[in-house]
Length: 82
Image 1 (spheres, rainbow, N blue to C red):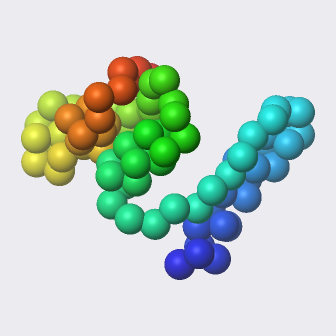
Image 2: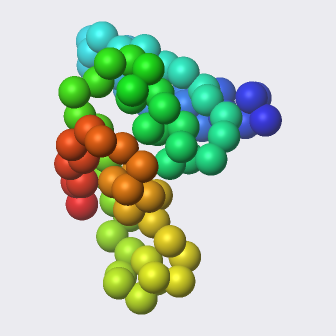
């Protein structure tokens, strides 16, 4: 599992490094909305900014949405970027 996660993160790490961006990279395991909220709170973040996949309203109702769950789980402000 961790090897798969590292392989997924590698291109993003390479792009950030090539752009000269200061960054940290962590591989966390768990239910995605829970992990996002717990990590943001543990890091003392002021807000959460996350992308959406642009699923339609019907798909969102049937499948659920990570962004929607994050909004409901956190007291932090959440900005969604489409």
